[in-house]
Amino acid sequence: MPRFHRSIEIKAPIHKVFSFIEDPRNGPEVITNLIEVKNVSGKGQGSHYDWTWKMAGMRLKGESTFVEDVPDKRLVMKGKGDIESTWTYDMESRGEVTVLDLDIDYKIPIPLVGKLAEKVLLKRNEREGEMNLQNLKERLEV
Image (cartoon, rainbow, N blue to C red; front, side, top):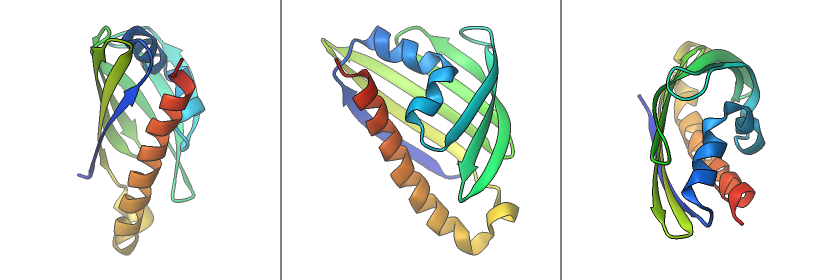
């Protein structure tokens, strides 16, 4: 299972960063491949939403649930459907700066992309993950 890990400093209070990430409706604003979020229900641990994702030109659909929600500290979302993933956001406040660690574990639907395309797709996902964090930083910095 591939894993993406990056850390970024965002010049914004931790509560602002946490609140933005905790609302899945904000995802398409900063995550380039997230096409749509709908049917959002609940808040915090146990909340749930449906999503449409674009990977290598293919539309993938699924649903995610918040399995861990520790205010201003940690969010963990598990997704299932056309692609399985776990997104873990760990946050630490350093004054006016929030240090955000993002870990994404995911399973590429090999039958959809083929074994040869897997390496290319992994590299593309790395670049897009870095771009998504940069988008988040730009959106939230005060």
